Image (cartoon, rainbow, N blue to C red):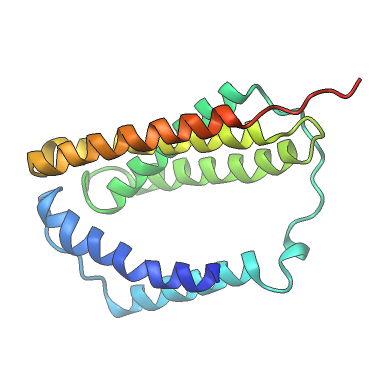
Length: 190
């Protein structure tokens, strides 16, 4: 089911960013990639879906040596920083700063990915890992993403869009905080 949803979500994501956001928000031309780029991206997406959800996915994820997870707040702050960096990389990919060195952008993106892939499974393998750690990561990433998205709404859209974003973000933040408060950390049975 996840595979189907991802594939179905790809078209509106592509269309909204390349055909709407670029000209209306970032004031750069519509992006129509060459067919070879589209085919390469489709092949990469299918390969990643298969690697993540296919029958051999366990072979790609050996058991992780546990690391004691940091405080929930630190995980949330780390997730917030990673989400903000990733959003910046997305903006660069859509042409907001054409002169930005590609090598730097790729190195930063790979650093975020490698750190996430290396640390998070090791934290999750530790007995102290709990739902509150997961909630901290989710809160940090989502709230950071909502915050950095204001750049596009402040400079590139109507006041109605901006106020709608503010109202929906406040509702979303309240609901996320409510959910996080309901998640209780594990108690030591001793």
